[in-house]
Image (cartoon, rainbow, N blue to C red):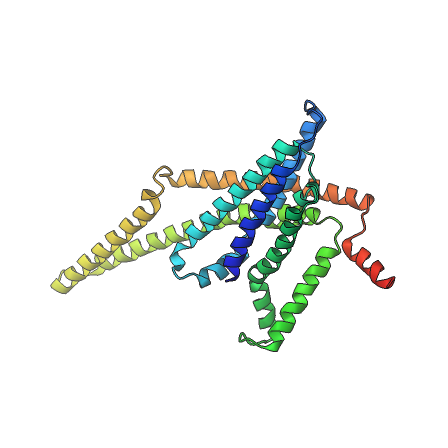
Length: 320
């Protein structure tokens, strides 16, 4: 139910945001030609966005939770790929509309803060807040369960679970309200911590698991051949040899069909290793640049310090 409501909210926010962009009047001044400094700023924005995108598309903690709730758990890849395609399509449409209306580099990190105040905009902001609350239930479920196990709290519904999850949620809200610019947190965490989990570690794990799988197959092959060599020529042993030979061929046929039929265009192990190396090298490069720029932007933001929301709330409460 929560996932269905979240999907409806996301589609509604997308429609409302597009409506606000369509109703927004474009700037009257004509765009000036892009200079070298503006070009460098553009690439800085791209590298900073790399961390934000990594933070946004970090689905690793949620995948197992979603798979456990699926009826056909083997179709997980369909759900993941479909979710990525739909999300990227929505991001692309909103980004193109924003560039057409406002141009490059003229919007704030939050598009909702750039658009003029209107009823659809307020509705979209409220729906975004509701969506974040619903998403935290799914995305933080692994954290909640780990904390419950550390505190020896039963997995059954009880008062202790409600209190613990409420406290953790309030702490998350407190931390979020204590940061003046949350986009810096997203880009810093995404570019420095989350990006390696998405782009660096998975290729390395894949290469390691593939090597272990091949070593296991080679070991099985050697064991079968050694058993065949030690056998005496008898009827039972001949039948056993045929059984092992048939099993050996079936195993290697299934391995070949899984590995090469689906990915015929990548027919060699060397090509897979090259692709993994390219992904890791590109990710390390982007992560290094993103980390440097995010730390630099963080230092600049604290030089021009902006009071966080929680400070304003505390001041208003004290003046009551």
